[in-house]
Structures are given as structure tokens and as C-alpha cells.
Length: 149
Image 1 (cartoon, rainbow, N blue to C red):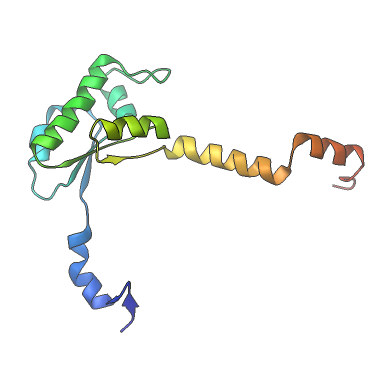
Image 2: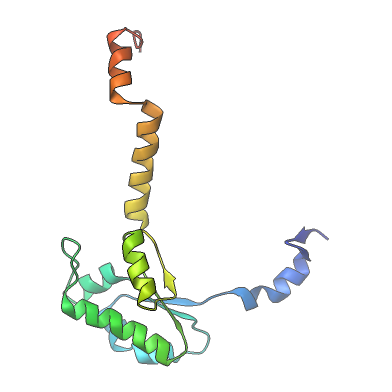
């Protein structure tokens, strides 16, 4: 039988559940209100806060990168309840600096960026590199390097 990571497929399937994490996202007013009950559900490993969705849902959206005090209190509550129930706490961050701040505050699972910001930035960087510098492109156009395209 084929081996996966040093174990057979059967061995892997027999122990796979021991390696799984169950993560619940706290992103609504209802979830925030019930976070204590949610945290007590057996098998849940992580309470994960999505501050953008939570802020919108509780009427305090993140505007211009700034969190309303009520949203900060909600984030703190989620982390506190996770700790009180021996669960890990997680949160979305929008930058490496913000991720470091959250980690320093005690969040154990922190995203370093969101796909909505990371993917466009990465694609723009790759396209800029692929195109070369604007000066180089302008010189090629001036030399007629792109005739016929």
C-alpha cells in the first residue's frame, strides 16, 4: 500500500482526526452574544474573530483602518472567552505589523494578510516585474520594438 508522509494510507486515515482543528468564526452579533456557549461546545479548538465582518454586523465597521471602541471590546471578549474555556483564539490581520500586535496580545492564530489585499498586491508586483520598468518599456516602444502587435 502507498505510503503518505511515512505512514500507509490506512494508518493515515486512522489517525487523521487527531490532527484536525475545528475553528468557528465569531462574526455576527448573535455569535458574539453566544460566544460563551459556543466556546463550551466539545470539539471546538479555536474561536476565530473576523473583525471586518463582526464590525459591520454589530454596527461598528472598520473605517479608514480604525476600530471603534465597541469593536475592540468585542474582540477582547472573544479572546477572553477563548482563554477561559481553554480554546485558542484567532483573528484576521491586514498586515504583518498588525499581526505582530495581535500575537503580542496573546492571539495564537493570526493571519498576516487577507486574500483581498494580498492577491492584488502580489499580482501587481508580478505584472510590474514581467513588464519591466516603464523607462525600459518606453525605450522599446520608441525603438519600434512592438511594431506589428
